[in-house]
Image 1: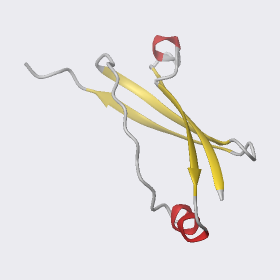
Image 2: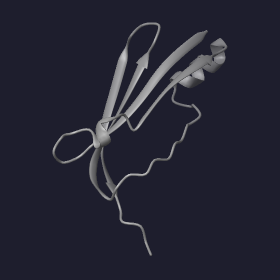
Image 3: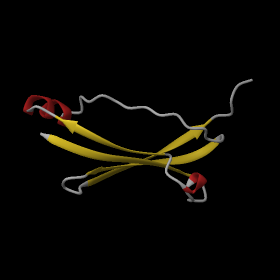
Image 4: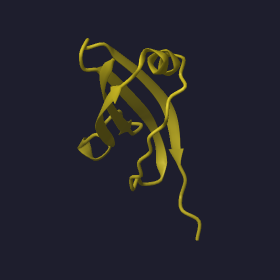
Length: 88
């Protein structure tokens, strides 16, 4: 089965505004599964993806949005994030 996911992430500051007025990350994944692989994926046994970004130290809210392209279904999660000052 073919599945396409759009994944977006945004950081907002204490003022509620989007950091740098843009998404922190945005990517579309096209996944093709056998029935057994799809069952395993649905159980949460999936590979992770990573990214890096220069973010000023501070307290933020990270919101991640996932949208299944075929159905339009959306899931979101928001978590607090603290970016520490770099060590010298």
